[in-house]
Image 1 (spheres, rainbow over the protein chains, first blue to last red):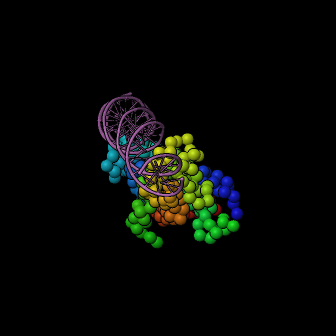
Image 2 (cartoon, rainbow over the protein chains, first blue to last red):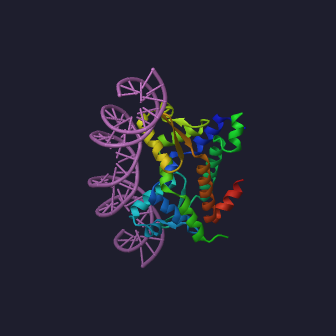
Image 3 (cartoon, chains in turn red, yellow, brown, green):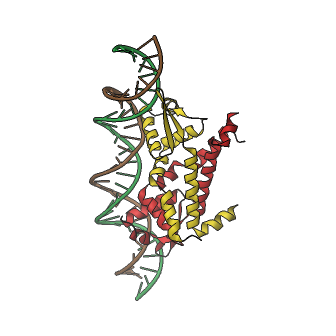
Amino acid sequence: MKSRTTCCRDLEKWLEPETFRALGEPSRAALLMLLAGTRGPRTVGELAADLPIDLSVVSRHLKVLKDVGVVTAERSGKEVRYRLACGDLVRMLRNLADALEACCPTGITELEAGR
Amino acid sequence: MKSRTTCCRDLEKWLEPETFRALGEPSRAALLMLLAGTRGPRTVGELAADLPIDLSVVSRHLKVLKDVGVVTAERSGKEVRYRLACGDLVRMLRNLADALEACCPTGITELEAGR
DNA sequence: TGCATGTATGCACCATGATGCAAATATACA
DNA sequence: TGTATATTTGCATCATGGTGCATACATGCA
């Protein structure tokens, strides 16, 4: 069984405030949903057309999401195609869930931790 | 296979900006780690003793975490014991990961390739 | 080169929220 | 009841960041 110190090091690794802050802004969450709901990448203009905020603001939000690795950007001519980094995001969420589960005594684990 | 509309409704359900905003603040993330690293609940005073911020601020942060269901509070005499809502949090993270994975077809292959 | 389109950035404004101190509230105990 | 301890809340301050507009930058095309 993992020691508590070990599990909490994992937790620190996956519980990145920067990432969660990025996801915690309504406009950015909406962007994420738009990207998730489309097969393939979308341009800044396309995304801005579906949101009630200025294109420049969308561009800035996408930068924030890119900086934390939630989306990737690829220039194609005049356009920049943004794509959800789905695999990375899913992996991060699952790793965090695993780290939390290892830390927290729940159910059987709680009984085991007690003896 | 789930339709895109269905999967994105799931996404909207689990991608709660409020929750992520709560986790995205460094002091609150630190509180979460403290709670995860302790067997059982901790009081406000105990938590505040381990952080470089005022006890009143800790109390407020705990309220934010409680409002989004990440921690639970239980009064015991003069003290209030805060406990990580570990099961709920783990469930939420896994559900979000599942919803994302269902939305992004490339994410699935990417994840499997990574294993 | 000049022009059109797409995107990013500088700037100012304003709302939100994190923080500490002081005061109020809650509870236990003598 | 009064006192001590634990927690919450009112208040003021200050930093951060979301927003839109105007402008600069990047790219493709005639």
